[in-house]
Each structure stands twice: as structure tokens, then as C-alpha cells.
Amino acid sequence: MRHDGKQAVQGKGGAPAMMVLALESSAGWTGEARFVQAALGAIRAELPYARYFAAGREARRRGMRDGEIARAAIDWMDTTLHPSHMLQLQLDDPHAVLNCMNAYNSRCNDYEWDDKLELYGRRRLERGAPPNGRRRAPCWILASDRGDFRLHATRLSPDGIDDPAACQSVSLAAIEYLVGHAQRASQDATPRTLSAMARLLGVTHSVAAEAAGVLEREGGMPVEALARQLGCSKRTLERALQAAGTSAGQLRLAAMMVGAANQLTSRRSLTEIAADQGFADLAHMSRAFQASCGMAPSALRASMALKRNA
Image 1: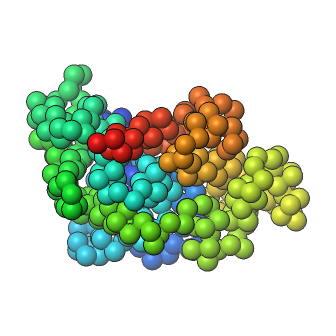
Image 2: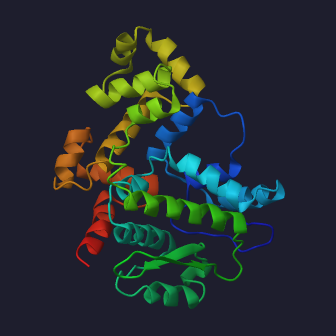
């Protein structure tokens, strides 16, 4: 994929879906559509860089200014269920949030993050294209002063990569959102769940939200059993969910992912978390996280632990 003659990006992952949607946002989203998008964001947390960069260019063409971009980012981040975001939203130390963000960025750019020497990642990037002619995606290298928190953000945009200013604005707004949440964590301690998203969006009685609520409370079940609980036929339920842009299987997996992400900061083993959330085993859960955000739950948990021990 190429962008207006610019070099293609072939990173391991993509851009967080909520940042892309913030740039694309316009009137017309229903509450149920937003709910379904939040649920899908737990199992498909990223969108291709090509779409991200195109959205950034189009946002500027529409005259979307930085303040409007920041407001859109906050609106969409209020409903994010991205696994990495879910972990960061449970932290009360902004330094730990930065560590998680840097680990997340590194998984897209083929370099290992050293939390004690931010320059390491920068040097690797400045050497030019990695083997096989690939280019790394633009990203932020984040650091902070010890003691009183003060964010330092350096944007790395390798030569030849199209890095629209709007993309930089929306990603920085998302960073500030997550850091700010950690700084006021004592006031924002409620876990994010599918049911909580439905309440926030005012769609608790929509078919998708009701189905998600049952699956969240009771775990996996055949579609026929889910339909009976909701008082409709299997075919009626399938049609209603299809019209909303999802399926019972997707909602069940989203509930499992959200439940697991909410337990990553606990002392429970990953094997216990996988069993509790209905995954076949730890390998199944790891594959689901890897497919969603490019990081296994062990890597997400490790990124938090590194800063805890710093």
C-alpha cells in the first residue's frame, strides 16, 4: 500500500481504531453503532495505517483544527476497549502509562524498548530502513521527568513516510487522555465493561447491548440459548445483530477480551484469567490478544511491571 507516492508502511500492527475513527468522525453515528464499534474495538483494536493516514489528510482537507481533533479524540477514547488502553486505564501512575505506551509503540516498529534509555529506540530508528526494505511507522517516543510528572513527547517520522499533522494531533490527544486518566485515577476507578459502555451510550435496551450483557454475565452459550434469554428466535437475533454490524460470536469474544484486560493488573496468573473468561487455554487467549492489538497479555503485563520496578 502506498500513500500519494510516499513510501509504504509495513509495521507489525496498525493505528488504534479509535484514533482513526476520531479523524473520520462525523454526524450520523447512532448510539448502538457506537456500542458495536466499541465492542469490535476489543477484538480488532487496530485499523490499517493506510486508512489512518488517509483520514488525517482528509481531516485537514475538511478544515478540522487541532482543538476539534482533540475533542473528537476524547469522545472516542471515552468508549475505547482497546486491550492496551484497558490496561493503561487501570493504572494510577502516569510514568507507568508512558512505559506501556512505549512498549506498545515498539511492537509496531521492530525494536525493543529499553525503559531506562529512551534513546535506544531512537538510535535504532535513525539508522534508516530495516532489513527487507521495510519502513517503520511514525510513532511517539515518550519520557517524563522523575518526581513531578511532566510529559516529553518526541515524534519519530522516518524519511519518506507520510505523517499527516492531523494524525500527530489525534495521537497526542489520546496520549494526554490516558496520562490524565492515571493522574486522576482515584476519581475514575470504575472498570470499563460492555455493560458500562451501553449505559454510557444510552443503548442498554438495544439488541446488541442486551446480548452482550447476557454473554458478559453468563459466559458463552449457543445462539439458540441466547435468543431464548432475549425472548426471540435464533434467526431474529442473528438478523438483528447482523443489521447492527456484529454477531453473537463477536460479542462473546469482546466480553472475554474486556474481562481479561480488566484482570491484567491483578495478581492472578494468566492461566487463571484465561480460564475465568472462557478461553480454551492460555494459548487461545494469547492469540486473541495478539490478533487484536499485536501484543500478548504477557507482554502487556510485563510492560506495566517494568515501570513498577523502576
